[in-house]
Image (cartoon, rainbow, N blue to C red; front, side):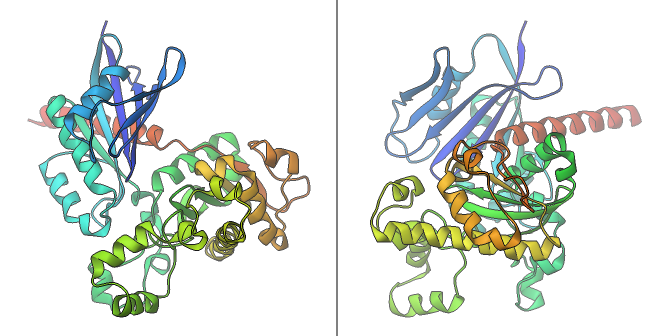
Amino acid sequence: MSREIGIAFNAGSASVKIGIFDIGSGVARRISRAIVSLGEHPTLRYDGVEGMQVVDLPIATDGIPINVISTVLERLLQGDCHIGVVGHRVVHGGMLFKGPTLVDDAVISEIESLMPMVLHHKPQAISLIDAVSSLYPNALQTVSFDTAFHSSQCTLATRLAIPVAMHDAGIRRYGFHGLSYKYIANYLQKFAPYIGGARVICAHLGCSASLCGMVDGVSIDTSMGFSALDGVPMATRPGSLDPGVLLYLLRTVFADAGELESFLYHRCGLLGVSGISGDTQALLEDFRPAAKEALDLFCFRIAGEVGRLAVSTGGIDALVFTGGIGEHQPEIRKGIERHLSWMGLSLNEAANKTNATVLNAKGSAIEAFVIPTDEEQVIADEALAVIHWHGRHQGERRQAS
């Protein structure tokens, strides 16, 4: 008997995470996971019969052509199966998309119209949609947007101090990592309902990093704004910058906006400050003063953003760490705690060192958690919800006719 399969593609600028789900019961249950590292020599890490396996993909590529996806799925899809739906993460939905949607030509055109806002992610998602269309022309495809979770924010949170016509044209604060924050909000509602309905600030810390303030699982404010360059410092991105710095650099250092864009995305952040690396683990293992300065700045700015978001949420009951850094680096969490002790945050040293789920010490005024995020699960859940809605409405239309 053929098994009904759903696939979730989570495309980033340098890798693609893939989740394979059994959807036959109407619920997305993960079967396996994989990550494809892109570049000149792509590699695949995936759940195999002997645990996590790593293989070199025999195709040189700087993108995601059909033959890469075909090679990957041949390894991941075992036995007799039918692909029922394929869901994709798209970073920016602008003001056009407030939730997941079924892919059609009109949706593709609307997504492409938003490309100038986020050039470093969206082309990968479009390439994946095209590849799946060629390989599995009968499979339904859906898209989930990182910005959609933040569409609940009020105008005070989304407004930039620019003329209203520009705001109405889409130059405003959007926020990102929404699929991750949605997963954390849903997880908290089940794991700790008394916290899931409270004032929570979540720190999604990885190569790309942001924070989100939530009340009752709803996004109130976030650190990233119009683009994924904003907010706290990241591996190679600067976070918030005085616009005057950009004007100065255009006048004195860079010939055009393209050069400046490359600088902001690839040469700033922890790499720029340290001159060593944008990888926090590498900096933690390096004892030069510049490495310490980069890490200190990272922790200081994150703690400062927690304070700012607490204004938006009206206080803070819990702090959640997620993402690769947030989940696995106790030194970073400890560095953040040092700047937030005045707010009553106190971490249990043993729990922090072991990356325990519950981090806070007894008597801490703020509860603290480590919760691994799962964006592919959210993509799969949203994809199922979309096709179920689509199926119901098709049935209703047939009955009406």
